[in-house]
Image (cartoon, rainbow, N blue to C red; front, top):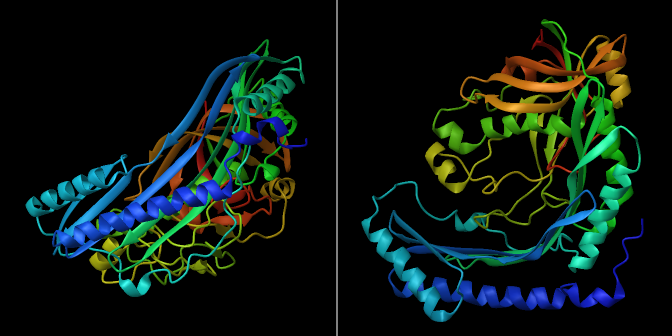
Length: 459
């Protein structure tokens, strides 16, 4: 589908010039806050603001349900008096409001207990330049355009298959904005960003019952967003495939996590090697730096500087420069993910992960999902995870799932009302293969994951 903007709606498209002018005003407000903090005798200070404006719309059964225009963003100031810390925020960027917030942060700092690990990230770690990573692509934010996308998507989905009997709705959103961060090291930087999404959730029915599933697309550039027809057709296919699901018996079998949920498995790895969990000794991967935790053929490479990618960033939330690095190399853990606070606690160096990870690329062995199923032979293909039964302290893992039963390398029928269980350390260590079907909608770019064996509880 052509995503060309309606010419009559051009006024609804924020221009880069407008966004840059707005960001310059915010940078001036950040400088004002930092300057006043210094006047009040702060030993250090940092200030950040993220500002976003855009539209969210929702439709259901061809009718408009919601139209929301958003514009938000607050300035947050953190002030240090030695090792004492105080924070305050304001949505009003007038000089008097900024000064009042700085004074509140200063007052709070006077009464907090000194923390020997509090403070800014090291000056030497600051980004020396703010690279243009092509993260901002403004799009039409008129209600007319947004509703046309959601309605086209939902109507197409409802017309594709007689088993699709209802809709849980379609939604479209478009947002543009920026993040600015500055501190008393003299660092101040900001960058523009955008995000657009389209989703559709459908309900199918047969004599055996009803099932629901969905599809969605997410991109920084509207030109990269799936068409309404593609989103709808993917939602139809997913919903219809789940109809007439069965239960299965209890057994220990190989399990494939399909690519659109495989990232969640590695998300637990992110938590387990993050500084806050490590210094609290609340991770099943304590003291594993430099040790093999994944198969020797597996490498995870992080690249924060990929142009246009969803998880790219030239610096983290503390101004620390981001850089490409291997997280896992040949199965061996190469780095923890550390903010400056965690790094000081652990007597290490900050890694540029304040605020999260950036574009993880997980190696694969070249098979598509069908080849992974053939390699598995008989087992469970998981396509949906439910519940929160994950313990990062000891690695125990238990989740409700739905998916498909596979025999002789071929999908046989949908299954539901199943629980899978294992231990994350074993699951990660016993990954047999990873497919090449990477899902581009996530910061962790990973294909489907085949695990040697898990306990599957059914009937």
